[in-house]
Length: 234
Image 1 (tube, rainbow, N blue to C red):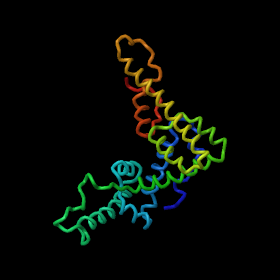
Image 2 (image 1 turned 60 degrees about the vertical axis):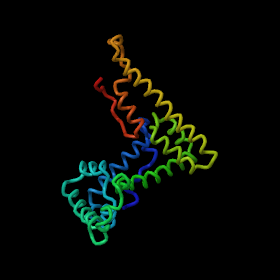
Image 3 (image 1 turned 90 degrees about the vertical axis):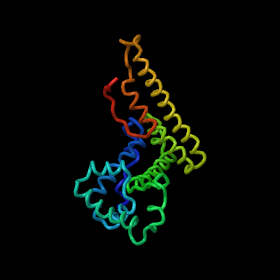
């Protein structure tokens, strides 16, 4: 795979100052990889070897079906199915007296071309983020101006802080936690307000920012990008 397929200046991911910037990073990586694998790359031998070996998780099967042509998906599946058949039922497959795939379904480790490449590229981008944090005051200011960091990505960045020098790690973790906790308190209050609006005594009260509180809370907890700001069903 071309090493620059998922490259993007970190500052571009942080400039919107809306939502979680690492959720935007994941969305960007997922979109670019799906477009890449369903485009000309599907005919590249080294890429095809990897997609045959790894396949796709259910989520990313849906993703490539959404962005790619039916022919491109069929070509990817054609060679992947042949490899699956060879591994499961071919000459080197497990003997008939043993379990077909060697382990119970619950014990099998899922693999996915997009998931694995997202993780690899995310690690590179987080390294760039840490580098910017350590040497550029402007980026530290931009980082502090983010709307929030979702719980999932706050944990990711807190673990990544171990790659920073000790003097830089502590203030970085402090800022990560501030951005995550302050938004947690905001969305928690909005969810509570949403619930209270169903009390008959609040029939004519102001919904405030609570109409999309459910979606924002789920986005915060799961690391799923949420861009909606319109009115949702109460």
